[in-house]
Image (tube, rainbow, N blue to C red; front, side):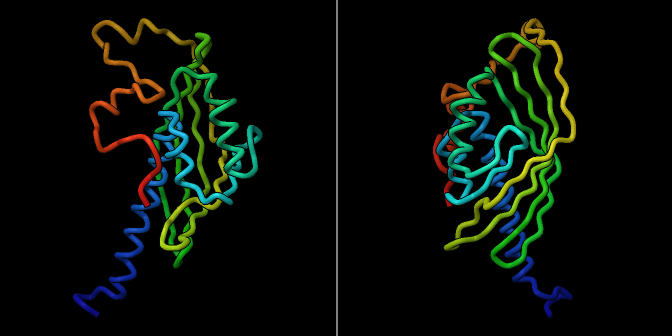
Length: 183
């Protein structure tokens, strides 16, 4: 025991693992919001399972196809915000519950959608790399509201987010290149 702290090496390791799990969650949001398929794919193991409610359930490779070819093209902008995160680490496996709010603005000018969900994640460390092995999404609430584009201009005007490589973040943040999350 040193300074009353037992097992500090294990505790420090768990903190570093939790930081990596947080990075995986942030990469999920950025991968979807910026439509960076390589980044999103890099956070899952190839044999991972994604359960996205009644919209999709199955192998992550087919989830990528569904998300990028069917779901996301319906929206001009999507944005995901992470709220509470709670992780438990046990050796080379971990579990996490992450609360999210997401925003979806359609191309057709229809209602904008705000939704809250929780992701129930199982992570593994394989060959020294932590990734998602299984993710299940449960809905907390969802609401649609009319879109008023006039609110985006005037005294509240900012550059608009983009869902691709033309987003301002790629110009302003040189360390946030498109592509896989470094291991």
